Image (cartoon, rainbow, N blue to C red; front, side):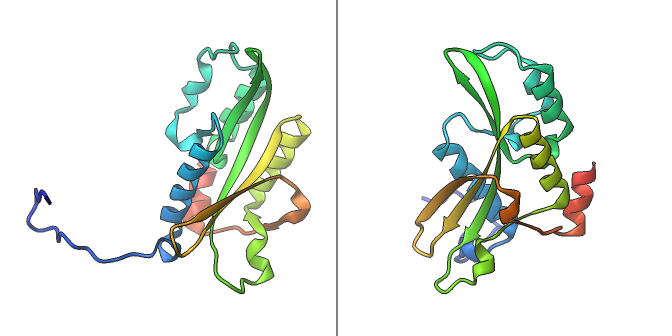
Length: 172
């Protein structure tokens, strides 16, 4: 049964292809898939910065980790705390990309693109001893998807500065 609160909204809005939708929709769906496929993954957009000030099962975050995350909060897709025996071992950062798979994709489609700012952040993270991963969610036309997780390697990255509106958001 369809419950219609507002008669002005059409009940059948049409069929949509997720692979051809707005990139924001696809990237948000990709982030949610990553969250459910990678244990204990924290999507940054689900939290406020003060989340980092609480006590975790392994204790409080080090000032180095807390400062790094807060300083780069709006540029990081996801993170998790690597711990063992209730002791924090390391911070792991994740850059999540959602891609549509089509037969005969050009080679360039497999190259991950990030902004120069994000590249600098991930290089700094590695220099600080943190672990950085790239997660690629490949969407197929039959509702299947693949999740590829690999270590971040700046040699395999291309700079794609994105839209001006997005860049302005990153600057804030």
